[in-house]
Image (cartoon, rainbow, N blue to C red; front, side, top):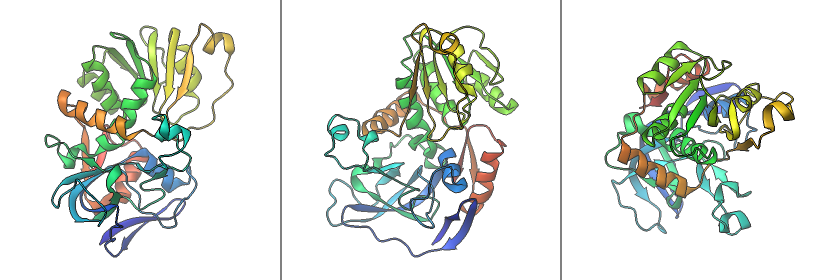
Length: 326
């Protein structure tokens, strides 16, 4: 099968690999589409330390179940399944027992610890696969499986009050989906990001304003989410919050944060929070909500043989929205 592998930091190679065989607890999925996530860039560039030699990246994969492990129940041949970032937790630690499986120290991840969806076939533990909603199109909506789910968790972590004012710093694959969730809930959304195309998309989606990432928003924010992996924006976003406001940092990787001023950035009971992965419950809730309100992925499509170009375009900010390999 055709696949792509990260063979060393900065090097993505096309390869012909055997079709993987499912373990007893696994599904084998014929991949129809796989979103291109910024985390894939972090794996490629070495921002995340290597966990698997020559790993196949990709953790926003959707496809047809073509083989089922001997211990799997509840799935049938031909079902459409989503393969996401989280693929294993221990189930017994204090965090797992408390519903915080995203913080499990024995967690493992698709496209980092195990081969992912930049390939014609991929396996996934059945307990971590998502039944794909019938109203969603894999060719455009595959990014919902990470960009969407992480945005959903980040929005919850940001504690946006009903009818509140939300600032989104960075406006790529995840932020443009999160904006739609917030707008559907009645929020007023201000986008602060580089790139004319991203700002145009924000306004087309109904956001109240779109300006440069270092600009002040038109009004103080109840909540903000930082999607851009730029630590310099942390004090900028904190300074834009109202008293008691919350900033959630959504990325798995962030450049260094400059010194913060307690009086200017954190006083008045402002809160700084981070987001780590997601739980399966987050994923189930988000996919149901996305189907219900009609979240629309602004997708730029590439062939699987163009994965290297898609990642280069993502790195250089050459498109707004999200990229999908199909």
